[in-house]
Image (cartoon, helix red, strand yellow):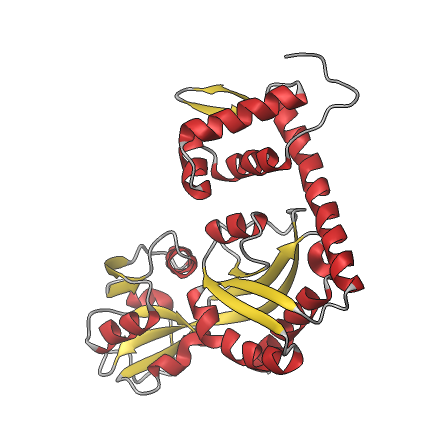
Length: 311
């Protein structure tokens, strides 16, 4: 590599590719997330390395891994991105922030149980702001947030979500969503007020895809209870899951956010003994954008609506 110039500059779009490689771990997954080819990703990283004057990747078997210099550059990239967001937010604030558009990315049960009331309130609060919704979960949700395809991310803490310490985002916890057991009417445990999760270790289970937040949480909850569930059906749609439970095809863990879907079905909801399983729901924006008046209003309304859910 050439010596680092005192006036060197880097392409911010290429920094985005490097940030995504850090998140995804492989060129192929990075290419898929960014809708590029692996070759194009390699070319972007190579061009960025030439701009920075340092190696950014090194061979690791058949793949690549980030160098120490790449991680140093990424730490600065997070600060640069945050400062650009602050500049954008300041410009929005200068214009009073009363117009524009916001896109919210959210997981499916959040769209069912949280967003309708929040969006009704936002329509009255920000009548000249268009609010769009996209269903997404980590890691794709935060790839879209980084790319500016969405402005607000509503997510659940699980392995694919960014850690609390991730400096790329400003986040606020919204509420704890408790998970209940859903069993068919007439199930052997349906007449109990509370049940131990392990009592259903021999049942057939209906669980979301392992990559989804609820699928991942359900698997970890069962593992913590001391058993591996016998998963016969992998279903991510909450209405379909309710129909399968009603049909006697298995039992499931369901978040209280989607309880209304079960009101008219022959399904019994049971509380687990001890501390009930739960998941943490949070809202995140790009670091620096939290001072944007429109995004502030959206995040505030999400907090207000969430507080009503748990009051």
